[in-house]
Amino acid sequence: MAALQTEAASPEKIADALAELKALKMSRGAPGRLVLGADSVVVAADGQLLAKPETRARAEAQLRQLAGTTHRLVSAAVIAENGQPVWRAGGAARLTMRALSDDFIGAYLDAEGEAVLGCVGCYRIEGRGAQLFTRVEGDQFVIRGLPLLAVLDYLRVRGEMPA
Image 1 (cartoon, rainbow, N blue to C red):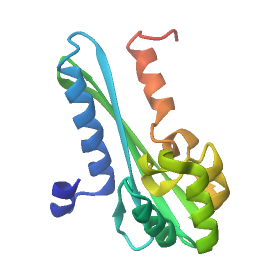
Image 2 (cartoon, rainbow, N blue to C red):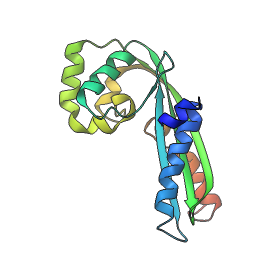
Image 3 (cartoon, rainbow, N blue to C red):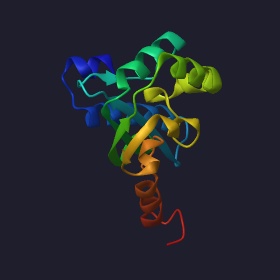
Image 4 (tube, rainbow, N blue to C red):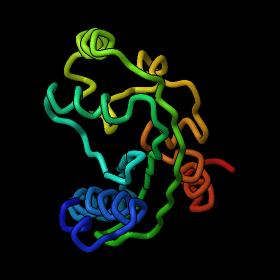
């Protein structure tokens, strides 16, 4: 991600490139199979791109940064076959996080445990993370990290799923 940021790539381009890297890595070892890679980035209100926090201290800092603001979450998916990308899609959502107290952030991270460290933006909206927000605009699947409806449509077009 750092190299793409240095090139001033858009959040969409970064999410797509990360998804493609995942798909291609696995596809090379699975000839003849479709392999899906997906990734997401959070664009804070100040334009800073956020990645998975990896440590509790970084998670606390990210939640403080996002609290009381509206941010964008950009997700991308790439399907590869025989080591080559054959399809891609992306989507974005806007999320408004309510103001959060330090006590709330601590209790939230205690309750979420290590799982939240693997989540861009430090939330799992399908669970306890929903309480962080006052407004959510966009596809819930995109927010969860995968433009699932587009993926399913492609698989139907390819004949991999019943139409």
